[in-house]
Amino acid sequence: MRSLGIFAAPGKERAALLASQLAEWARARGLEVHLQIEHEPPREQGGDGCPLSDDVASCDVLCTLSGDGGVLAAARAAIPFNTPVWAVDLGRLGFLSAVRPDDLQVAFERLVNGEFEIEERMMLEARVWRKGEDVGGGIALNDAVVAKSALARILRLSISAGGEMVASIRADGLVMSTPTGSTAYALSAGGPIVPPDLPLMLVCPICAHSLNQRPFIVGPDEMLEVHTEWEGDEIQSSSLDAMLTLDGQVGVPLRPGDLVRVQRATSVARLLRDPHDSFYARLRLKMGWGE
Image 1 (tube, rainbow, N blue to C red):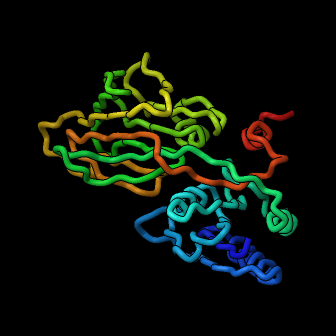
Image 2 (cartoon, rainbow, N blue to C red; image 1 turned 180 degrees about the vertical axis):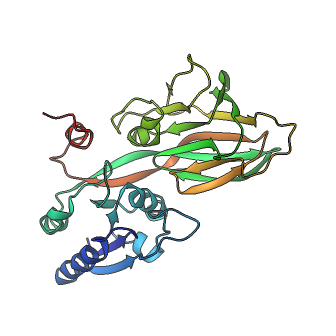
């Protein structure tokens, strides 16, 4: 490793201090350091949704001092450079993080010594099609979500997988998730917890207006298609009535009749993990399932 990118997310009291300390340790080891410390979140995005500079994202290793939101933003920014992300947990759950902040100095020495492993995570690509034209979309590590706004009417969603109709539902929205995202919004929507190395996609309705509508799983190579309408389309609808969001950070406004296509992305997220850690150990700790 010759260079280290460090991203300190806004809204985290310890992030700037730890970023400065980490940069000092890295320079003492002869590493080139690119440091990005955010103090204020941009108004159009959430606190962890700040864009990362190319100088930071293109280093040999990209360190995030943030919650999971910062890791999601970093994973997307790192894709063009194939950079692995080393996540320090400053959030609440931290399912994506490799290091606790109190262990940072020891973990950094282990990082320099090559003791962390690269774990590849499946990502999704979601695009919005309107009258045959691609009008926007992007890549997500956790999920692609079709959801109504707070004051919008109920959505009518027709869901197809692999070209075959699966279900037509009335709901507040739909979460289409990777295994990594199974511990995020999909979990709140009643979906199962899935180990991140299982190749599949979760489909979880949000507040479905039917007692028999349940989350389901499709294969990783299926194309999911969601046709969107909402109740009372005879009333003029606004593009703010519903939105496709990627990892809760990137949004594309939807209109009645839009088609949302979601499939496995050709890119993968590369996360550094402690080989002595495990998904189930982290699950016991974060979910409080231990003794």
